[in-house]
Image 1 (tube, rainbow, N blue to C red):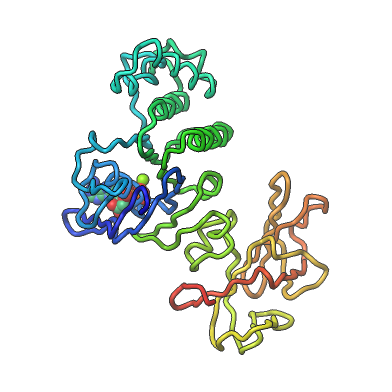
Image 2 (image 1 turned 45 degrees about the horizontal axis):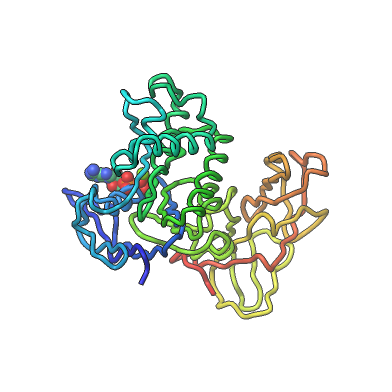
Length: 351
Ligand SMILES: Nc1ncnc2c1ncn2[C@@H]1O[C@H](COP(=O)(O)OP(=O)(O)O)[C@@H](O)[C@H]1O
Ligand SMILES: [Mg+2]
């Protein structure tokens, strides 16, 4: 049996709105699971039910085999970091970080030493004697994280804990979080709407939409083999190119294409959506499609070239060697190994 298990978990608000609709999830001991989805899809509500801050309308939560669905939050051995941190204003940074250890009865010298060690790793040493009001928002958030990680509970729950940090700090904190989690082996459920963060942290990503789980898998699988159009669009930045096409069996016709795409295997005839990540699309003198470059976006180590074609907008990954193609007419070659097909009616993947 898994360590943390959510069975048919549901939350219906008074008035009838369904926030979480039958979530099934098993988190293994020591696993880092990320709930990923757009704002309002039910991530926070799911996490708050696991923490014991919200009573489920249905379903069961088990921790290490024990039913904790109706157990008070204080008896769950769960550590939580919220989107909106709250530090104790009358305590110093050092005392704030050490506070959960004080509650756990760790002697003063020992808990302050641990707080100092954590602060060191987060470059907070210079701030240890300050009070929260003398810190920037980002520093307050980092102190809140250090405080949450001082204690090693059975489960860590984190709700967009890096929200207010700038991108450099955010990347640094991601690595810190993951290192701490690996070191201590604490099962973690982490909530974010940011797919970059999810990829970076997760053993497994759980993609949610409208209160339901759409796909669960390791980052590379969710990225490479999206279960449907929603995941294909939401994961990856930019998301997968999606073009309306028509299958005639062994071939696929795209609007305005110079030739049909030919497959080794049969695809049921009818309308399909062709998905292709930018790394499978190459700029060429000619190609399956041609079009005008609407945007040539420099990303530092690579470029994303957005091309307006008769079949729709297509983004190609390009190297930084070539000069900008902004405004030019270009051809696009497709690497068919990257093709993923979807049913336009249901949005699900066609095998
Ligand atoms: N206390 C509440 N009462 C009523 N509706 C709520 C409450 N909290 C959240 N909601 C609604 O429940 C849905 C899910 O919210 P939430 O879990 O916060 O989503 P997420 O964290 O994914 O952004 C949203 O439609 C939100 O407006
Ligand atoms: Mg939320």
